Image (cartoon, rainbow, N blue to C red):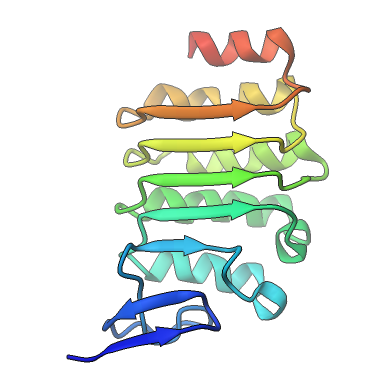
Length: 170
């Protein structure tokens, strides 16, 4: 079997037969979907969700910074993204950092409404996304059901002590 590289999607791959707009016909050796390395100018939210639903091998999902396609996603798309992540039984690591979400609390609430059913996530990073108390409260159902969660990194100046308290008692 032959190793391939798919630079368009930012993946170094060893043989899988996946047909999707972002992943082409390859997968990663370390099973990571890093949107910073992917070309999102041509990827819609549908492509992103499709890849999470049909690429069972992905165990890391990483985003840092502002991506136009993520900003154009509706609250329903964010909820569908959360559901796609929850349905991916291999997904262990989610990092959504510095996304400059607008409106942040509504987007975070939609995302966690979808993600709540996940029971495989062991690491969750949410730093500098601009959400506040309501966004923090929306994470509580997920945190109560996240039996595999070992590390939860969150740093946002707008959460306040009330939001951190809601997270702490979850």
